Length: 217
Figure (cartoon, rainbow, N blue to C red):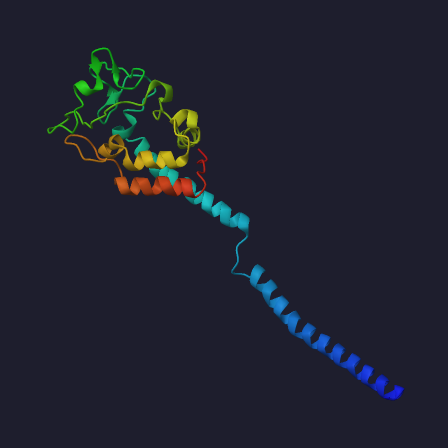
């Protein structure tokens, strides 16, 4: 049978070993914890609010670029305040007195398709055309004329204004709609839109992806 004094020595020795092990683990862990803390709040990190603010500002700038397209005559002439489309670089009232109509295709015998054929007609100041030429329908008139960047951005975020249920539908429209694409095709006697269709789609996507922020004015 082992003497009591020997047992006490073993117990004391084991206790000392445990304390030493705990001390070693604590000493190793503390610098690692400090290092992790420094990594999270170091000089290279950015506060989340600052990052969000930068992203939203980039969104606003993207919309301002797209706004130059929305307000160009080739685009805005079909988005007037009234129900008569506009014509030319000076955006005068349509010479034939055509009106929007419930579906945006004219009324009675004065239909848009009477002059706007399935493709652009050759020659200076001749009517442009696509297979489904029209204005926006009466229920979603989508007025651009007279809108500030702030007003237009707010309207684009209202699906009662656009008729689109999601921003993805808006992207699909600006990316694939023949009427939109046609606006970027140069016409004799008419000014060009200030950017390519590809650039336009890119800035619209950027505006949406970065928060669809509304410009300040």
